[in-house]
Image (cartoon, rainbow, N blue to C red; front, top):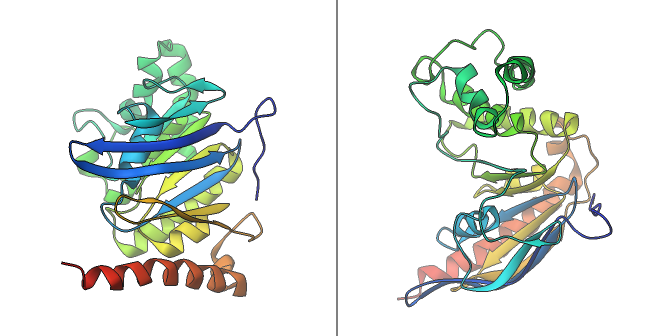
Length: 263
């Protein structure tokens, strides 16, 4: 596990986190830490609050209980240095690939010269060179998601939050994007929290897999992914990958089967 710290402390600390909507307690008592250049994947049944937790880390919605700090400072609102990649691309249909990737920089007040200098490099990093002037409707879903990743990376975030980023594309494209994201992370390692429903993806991407279970959900287990980096397709054939995948699968499936018999 790569769990480096910033000034002697983890980059993200979540303590006693809980979120309630009226009478519905979504999750409670959630505690975990994420270090610099550490990739934490979060997996759990649908409705367990994975996306809600991610949005709390981003400062988009407040916790009901507990707290979240980043570099030692409480998260109370969205902050500079944090970028999120959404499941459904989130691109502006009236903007070109170049303009979409440049959006975060422009919002941050970057000059035209700085944008013109930086954006092509990030477009190239995600494999979209030659498509700068295309609009989202003119490119595939996988290419749109590459654009979304480039937009997030262009602001050079300290923290990258991934909300089921490959869930809206077909299985073949998803696998391609997984390995592309691994390549990009190796080139520009950063703190990453990656929410997914896919067990293989959770194991492949993460230094640790955090399993949320229960109603309301809480942290059932944090599994160390002791697979070497860099990772590629050969990682899927590693005996340890199969062991870790089976461990996560059996943990989740036990609850899923029990839920079938609950009224």
